[in-house]
Image (cartoon, rainbow, N blue to C red):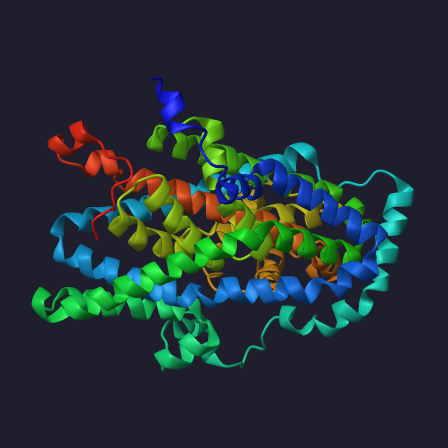
Length: 454
């Protein structure tokens, strides 16, 4: 009797089909296009449904801190108890230097070639001036942070960055969502736990493992609503700002978009090579991560998805991934580096301020260093720090601030995509894969769905 006659047709798995449909890149593009059309033609409806997406974003963000605390403490403890793991930390430092250099070079090259700030059309310049004048209240209200501090000001301001790194109350840092302070506490706490004998720390390690796995289950549940949340958020953003600021800032958005696409393309290539997968297969595997980055516009909120995809789907060492991803999220600030470099050059070109080679070098160095201080900041606060770069070159940042605010949603999305993709690519470059970490006998058996050992 034939095998087909015995087995019969397999039942239709609607969950698998729905998961493939929701995670398809074509679905993401369709939802983004539908959101833009909805925001343009049905703005009232777009604003009415926006609270639904905000509730969904709150669900996503509520698992971030438990995820980070459990994964970082557990990974640091395991790496301290394994002396061979120390070698990864030096590679992180090299990655920071390389990524900062590339971010400045890519965005600076695109800005100089495309001349994003030069507007030859007189009518376009008139519309640009009218838009800036119409947003005068914004510039006036936000002008005070850009003024230089008085000469006899508070001397602690020079050390404000260091003071902001160390929490005086870790519970207050957890409650207020101070990610960098929480990360520093987790690093120190993990180092201390690594010095405790394993029998004494075993119970806490098991509890952290349970918290981590519960957060992973939650993130897998939330993936079902990502396409719909993407549609709602894009529709609300389009209804709020319209398309006029996008056309006025077309050159600047083009530079940021090309810079983002460059980092995405290189990151996908690195991940495809290291995971030994096809390029398109890699894109489809990382598609949920891209949707989270577009929807939340938050690097921190995307970290659980980075850890989950790299360890569970791409089979990289879970312990190393859990350490490197949060650590590099604080250090590999690709998006802000792109923003500071291209934004400063845009203002210089807009106001006809020529920059010599020493000026360009200054923009690159200050942008790279300033980007390292943006961990945990919101998009507008990151944007406001561009005034520091402009201050060195005597550029009028306050006048152009309204333009950057108008396109903040689009630029923030590009920054998040650049940073998240860089973190993922740098992690797979450093972390060993499941195949590389396996014993020879395990390589022969090669069971791809085996649970990674924690």
